[in-house]
Image 1 (cartoon, rainbow, N blue to C red):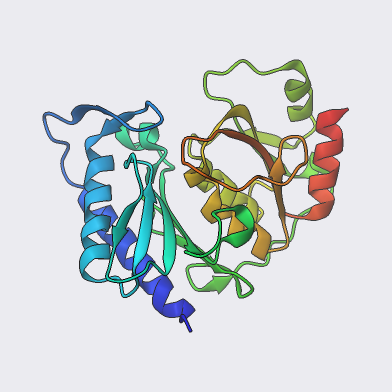
Image 2 (cartoon, rainbow, N blue to C red):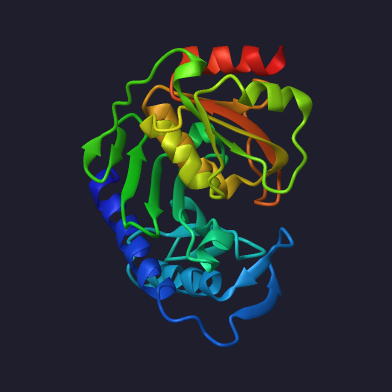
Length: 273
C-alpha cells in the first residue's frame, strides 16, 4: 500500500531540487536550439529541471515509474522491475514567464497507477509547486487537496459577477462569444502558466478558468485537475464533455474549469449562449 505522505515528500524533494537547478545564473548559451515534441523551444532551465528529476527518479524514488515529460520525446523508465506508476511531469510551466523573471511559473507532477490509462479520472497523486514563491499544492485521490499542509476548502460566490475568471488567450484572436463571456465576470486575469491558473481554481482565487485555444497539452492540466476534483470542482472540455484519455503529451485541448458544479454549469451556459 502506497503511503501518500511518503510520495508527496518525494515530489516535494524533486520540486526543491528543480528550484535550485533553475535559479542559477543564466548561462551565456542559454538558447539550446532544441525543440520538444510540441515544437516549442527548449530553454536551458527546462533541460536542467528535467535532468535533476531523472537523476532523482533513478537514485532515490522508491517506485519504478514510466516518466512522461514535456522535454522527452518518448516515455522513459526508471527503477527496477515492472513500473508501478506513470508520472507526467511539466518541469517549468510558464517558461516564457520564467525566462523573463515574470511570475507565475510552476512545476507539476501527476502520478497514475501504471495499470491505468492516463486521464483526468485516474490521477492518484498530484503536486504543483510555484517556482517563484516556493509554495506547494498537492492532492491524493479521495484524501483531499492541500496548500502546503493546509486543507483547501474554497468558499466562492455562485454568481459570475462576483468571481474572477482566468483566461488563456496569449496571441490568439478572441472569438466574439468568448469576449462576451469574459464581460460577465468581476475581473479577468491571464497568468501565462496554465498549471498555476488551474490551481487557482482549486483555491477559489480565480474561480473559473477558460482555455479556448485548442492548444493546451496534458502536462499542464492533469495535476491541477486532481486538486479541482478533490475540492468538489469541475473540469471538462470547453463544450462540457469529459476530457478524453491521454495517449501522448502532444494532444491539444480546450477546457473550462470551475471551483463548484454550480459555477461551472452557469459558466458553460453563459459561454454557449
